Length: 515
Image (cartoon, rainbow, N blue to C red; front, side, top):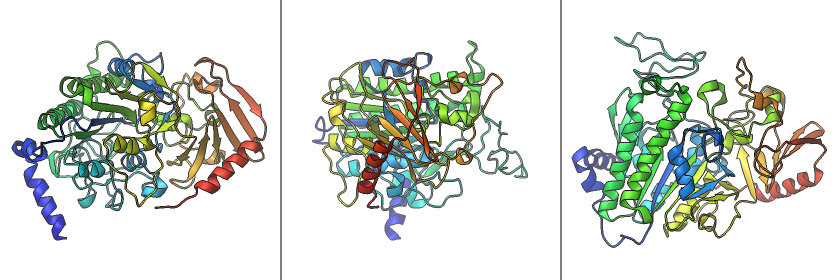
């Protein structure tokens, strides 16, 4: 354990404020201009329809829409899981949860995290000469060797898990509403499972290994993230070293910050106001990139999973992907599920002079692809002792191809069955669901007084894909027209045996060396 003590001591001492630029970026030299920089921004619980460029009904993402016009927008891009920790683990490893060991969310009380034998993107790039930083939500283990500073990140500023997993002095908007941290001698209430509120642990804010504020002030967290991200970009650019910056936003996860949103005089609902706040934060990071390293920095924006439907008006939009079959049974078709609204997420790529402008890509891509793509663009090498589920999407990014995955698996993320089990498979323009028993279609859909009209329609999609749903011996097949968002879907009852045989063949080939 001697090495661990020395590493903790070194990181803890050298990352004090005044030494931060010196220690993190001291190794300047002949790397200038030879390798691209990477900024990966991951939104939390953001729906596909929350991006205005995707869904005309959204008017709150001016900066992101501008990025789409100046770069590439992916309309068939998917999270690797439909909940927080598994999706983030897959982004940083390029591997599904059944391989990397993260199939469910880590708790406040978890003592482990992303298994230590997994190699992160930050570790690969740091070995290739990059300086690495992370801002925001980690949620892959917060004790000892699972901390970001020991998983390849030279610098870390953020919270260890979701910001609803600890109390704050300004709780913000949530369903159900949660109280502020108890005052006094600690006799306040503890977490109750019925209310799903945490009041026994105040949410901490870390800078490297040090807690710099507890509880976090949610109303100023977005601005703190923007400041730290722009400082990191500035220091790294000035040093001449290539850099990786991973920004994992608190937006759009509940609780939504209350102080600034309640002061919105234009009458926007809290979710829309929070979406604008997130959009401004992303705009600040992009502006800093443009001013310091515009032509040599690749910025990738996406989300960890779809919106949290149980939060009702505090949740985002799935756009056209309402999962009519599922919602007709009374279940959610968003976060935690393998329906499109659970894992199809907004995605943008921006790299002036390299990624073509104002291009919409229909390639089937995934968060899994970030790892191998960034490693390839950095001129680094993938670890040779393991299998990867992502692919190098460089040819798509450069506008040379529209070909992504032929097959993409979607694991259970808590809605039904075994965590991490591969319950849904996408095969080209078809999608098959293997778990459709009504009593395991959870969580339940939140129904308001007005009801969700879109959930009652054969909803609106924008790609040519079939969702095959097996229940007993019958199958409902919904074919989605490619003619536009407002195309009417036609349900067809049949038994798609040919597709079933193709899927069985793929499954026999794919399962599954677990290393």
